[in-house]
Amino acid sequence: MSHTHRIPQVAGLLLAAGGGRRLGGRPKALLEHRGRPLVEHAVRVLRDGGCGPVHVVLGAAADEVRARADLSGCVVGVNPEWEEGMGSSLRSGLAALAGRGADAALVLLVDQPGIGAEAVARVRSAYRSRSTLAAAAYGGERGHPVLFGAERWAGIAAEAVGDQGARAYLRAHRDAITLVECSDVAEAFDIDTVRDLGRLA
Image (cartoon, rainbow, N blue to C red; front, top):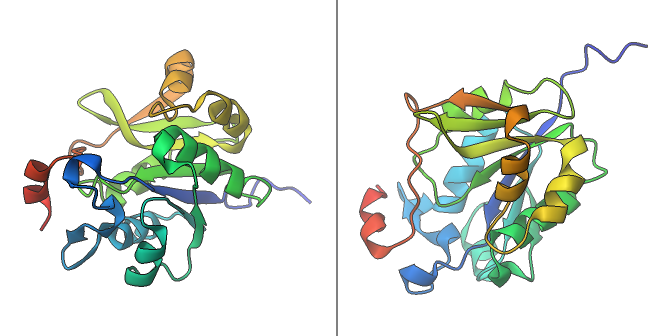
């Protein structure tokens, strides 16, 4: 039987482990946006953008996040080493996805509420094969979300240290990346400082 017609499975991978050091230690996952925790907003963005299953990596205040946010239907993992930075959360999320049949992972960060389902759907549609690398671009600059074909996960995980995430890997493979312009549908700001909280509705 030919497998060419199988719809590729692009899992959503939401990195939501950060402790919000510059926000007085409030976990970013629980910052309120439109009346609900940011982590719920981000899960919905991944789903509405066509990703599934959705894996969520928690870290800071994981028990409180589970108690206060509705993560039903998601696969939720906790990165015990979240304080090492985003790299360890990316490694932990890719490890949780490995062997579950997904063809690619689309990675979104919980603290970028200006990125909605339309940007996710655009990046998702750049999937061509299990070796695809794609990323949203804003005025030509690479940003999130990013899509990693499953064949690339091991290489990315091997280089994901500290707060680097996939940066070193993406730099080394820049010629292979499909950039998907999203500046007309999304804004790539981070919620990092108290001043940024004004960008949450």
